[in-house]
Image (cartoon, rainbow over all chains, first blue to last red; front, side, top):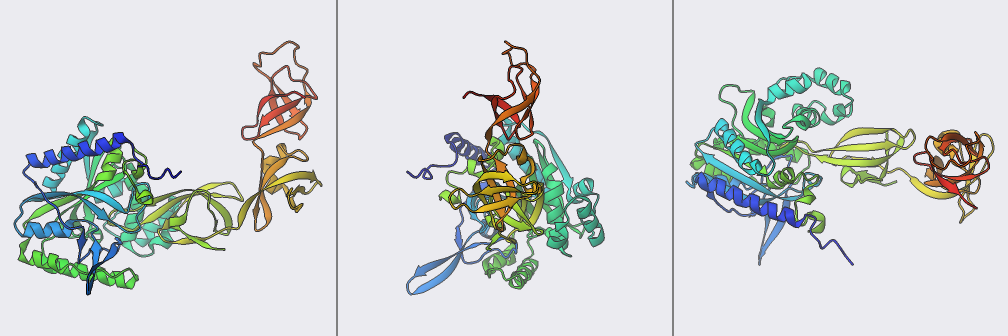
Length: 326
Length: 189
């Protein structure tokens, strides 16, 4: 008899998920952040060359349309913000094609929120508060740490992440038994940073504590604003606990023209790399033109949060039905 | 031989890496939310037995290695090669000392073992988990001692030396765990 009809997670973890969702809703209700829902299916999709999406077909005879499953609810939520929603949050499914592993399932749950009037430091404080509320009575953490990307990268590797020295980066890889980095990264600064950060920095971040890393190099900016004082960095923050990447946040880019240019640039890269063609979300660009209020936003992988709360080794331990059993 | 993408790297898969046949032990998908996806792979070189870690860009692929495990009967040692036979087909293979490795301590004529073939040539030999071998040499123990504490070295018919309890004598057959090289029990006729 087939046994794979069963969920991979325990009933105890189903309860944990329900309790954590209730705690999150209480947290944001107390802060007057509004819960919203946005579509999972949309006409436009993110252009990030590092994210692959699911494509589906909408049939309303005689018409057929291509729709995408969202890789995050970001664009639709920003349209709500531009329309005057005020601060909002959402607990939503997101889909990323080809991502499967101990920390990845192609369909997963995001907690995403935008706080109007917040700059990056305010958002970081709010993240620390939320994590404290969720962890305090389940798994008390040590004091929250925060480092600039440059500071922690330099401390762990001795390399400057803001200035690309091919020679020094290669020497570092060879000294650390990572000769394959030379082939993989070539002369691409962003890939070098991803490689070295994920091998030699991230595993040591936030041992039994929340660790926030802010001020990412400009080549890793995505939808963050360039820092007002230092053009080499962006107002982007990432959250780590026990070396696990838990969330990503920005002081949101509100400049429609710059956003549109970044989309075009990324779509060019997608074409060069022969990746599936994405469709620029013109409605987001229009919303930014209408005016996005100054705000900061954060997205947290809820399944990973549950893994950390329950000391689970694999995302399958907190999902009812991961992709193989879906 | 087919090639395998990083997504197909499962524990036990045999692939070619730097010209050597290897077995995947562990494969971890590493992807920063906004960055390049990698696979960190733990891999055993089947020639040297060494375990290394190697990172691949997700989606890269490696050629499969023609490596199979075949149960064979150990026949004899001609001084240079040890000879094995597949019981069903009577097909014979010869393996040099390098391929036989530590297994030489536990191979007795007629015993079954697992021979790993790479491109139809023996790459390594794994003895059965438990083997029964006669003792050819050991100090006489104290009669009546059945406590088993302490023990003494004993040489087996294959030349291997294991620690046995004091009461075990020359000529007796003992059962040995080949994974640990430890004495398990006496074998009564």
